[in-house]
Length: 473
Ligand SMILES: Cc1ncc(COP(=O)(O)O)c(C=O)c1O
Image 1 (cartoon, rainbow, N blue to C red):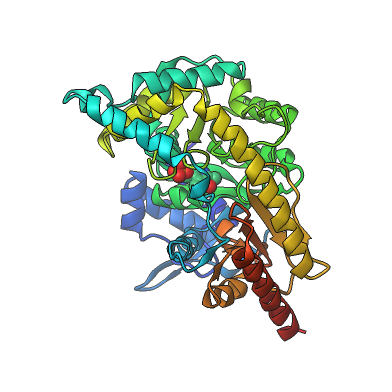
Image 2 (cartoon, rainbow, N blue to C red):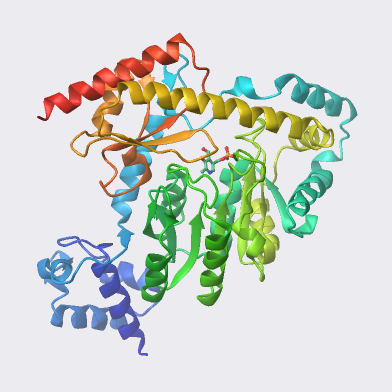
């Protein structure tokens, strides 16, 4: 295909996907030539073709703009491609919400972290003190990417307990899962590539996609069923998708866990379209019932799944240690880490390796799961007492989030602002999607002690919701 035609097709798809909405100015000829590496003549020819087909209009002395009928003349695509400007808006709102949850005077129902009092702080400190006594000057170098060998071996053994055979060399230790996810995304994409996420999805995915100048396609996901695999396949047929960033266990914010069968179908589908999968599995140990659900990684036959985990949600948030089992991308991830943050802190890696070599970790996890389950139940009961009868509270097992859908006319961003003034944070639906279809939903963190403070905060939240419901009637 001629080069100008490739650019024509690319821009047409972007206009159809509302990446360039009606009336938006396209990059100038010179900018487009620089971005695409094409000659000015080729770009000019492509723009002329698009203009002759009615997709764009030129305004003298100003540039090229998306024509009014271009976006509206076609049916809305079945999946939602996200405009970059929307992502940027989400970004600053996420920042505000996260800042608010740091204030100890605020009841942190909007936080993503569990109550740190549930973590074995004393034992962890004992490990940290122990390793600090034996720390040698060479340890900084010994723990460079891929990271501490003992820690990687322990992680490989934990995968093996689930029947997943991985070499410690497949694993890279990172600064929390956030770094694991970001490095993974960078390892499998180039700027301008297309990436699939869930709708709604963890806001960290939207932020990473924006930072790396990627294009996002959000696929409908449902509290019960999880991601719609049919819609995903349609997106894979329609867009040249390079990677998916998905959660398969206790998805944030909806809380669902995909069945093993659907995980297997998902990996097979991605293999058919040669798409890499970044699996965000930070809540993997917070399951309910006897058995830990398998990750999608368990069905990966050709190393395309980059499985990202963390200790932040189940052991210690402040150490900032996570990992990625990166399969065929392990070397690339290491190289990018070396060029960005260099490595994870050596004492933190050593302390975790020390702690995990005892049996305390599994005992702690078991107790943590029990406490979280009790707290979640109490929170559900309290919320049901104060929410409108037609509100829906998700009831997915495990983890510590509830996803609450209020009647559609109640805006949870307005609720967020009102609640904050009353000393309560929530995570409004707007954080998890660039569209507005979750503007009546919010995520509620149930991991806090269920005491009079929490009860009073839920009562207040109920009153604010009633106030908002009344105001719109
Ligand atoms: C779904 C999800 N993934 C990743 C992270 C980041 O984890 P970490 O603290 O290990 O960087 C979070 C934290 O909120 C999360 O909720």
